Length: 234
Ligand code: NDP
Image (cartoon, rainbow, N blue to C red; front, side, top):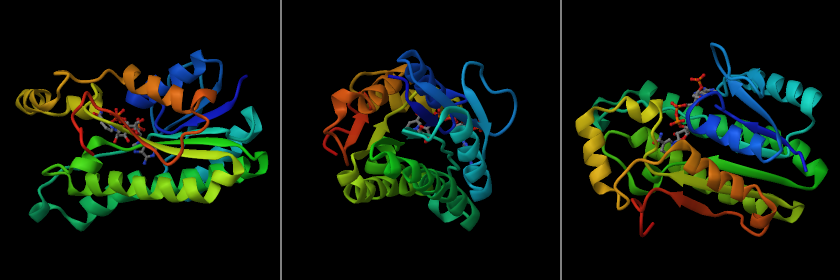
């Protein structure tokens, strides 16, 4: 069965791996991108999730070209790391605006069609850092922890309409986001991970594919770790 899927930030990194996994499973996949050339093989819509107008336009285009979104993977996210005392209002609010408010925006718009269809699957990409905390990432951790309360509220509100909403909390994944770290920082992180390595984006994508499959029909409001054991106990 081919479903209409949207992956925000599906042009690179974890989002692209998720888009590929769902397309390989037979779904029609739309991805958002902000600039440059998007990867081939998907319906690519230009959209900055901090802009409500662009979000609305993106949904209209997807609805026209591949039908109402039945599966949403809210993956787009940013970091702007800084120690608390040096963290500006802008450092804090811009990360919240993308990671939390941007996710609220795309989820809210997706549920319009899902409510009509009386079915839907929503997966939010959070982070182990949202549960563990991380020095220098108070803004990012707050935004990712916020996704948990948000998802669980959506799961309660929309469960009776056969809409599930789950959170995936990856650990450290080898993408542009973590390539920005120094070798020393990367070495320290790997030292804390029981499996002793970074995840590949495809390993995160495999769990997303499960969460949006029929096999996961009775899972909602869950926080699924894909973190090599880093967050054990949370
Ligand atoms: P990348 O930095 O490689 O990619 C980030 C993606 O988000 C890009 O596609 C980017 O689009 C998109 N994006 C950022 N801001 C916006 C915006 N305002 N509107 C639309 N799209 C936006 O990151 P990853 O692939 O590593 O991360 C993907 C998700 O996984 C993020 O939410 C991240 O927080 C989370 N995560 C990552 C981990 C890791 O170790 N890498 C660990 C845990 C969670 P563009 O190309 O236009 O910039």
